[in-house]
Image (cartoon, rainbow, N blue to C red):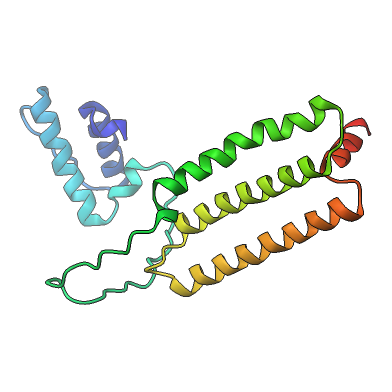
Length: 194
């Protein structure tokens, strides 16, 4: 990319490709000046474009096909007003504040059971629920960012339901682990000592 801004490199690269193609290299009488070099390079580049070889001389990496664009959905016409969504406190600054509160709450909840030295099932349950909520919010953000609702409404809805199902399954599993087994804190202590 930097060679596009340096006339000497651009000219030499275009000249080398032109010679490889067996095409005559265009020169001008004012080739010693920067404007003459730029003019010569542009003429050579135009010949390369016509030959369909413009990319080969300037790109060292292989070209890769990108995924095709998803289905385009246009609702209404150009002259119709955009629908303003109803205000929802769960999707504004309160949502952001709740995410930050959960993230900050994880710090003392992670350290407290190990620092205090006692195993409390209530602290363990709060820690487990906070980790699950934090993970749910993170995965939900990924779905919102990478599966646009306008392009893939069915896939987005399916991904959201799969996330909700997985979150519920993990909560039930943590409940079973807390009530019928040793709990999160004791399990981490045992793994740490092993």
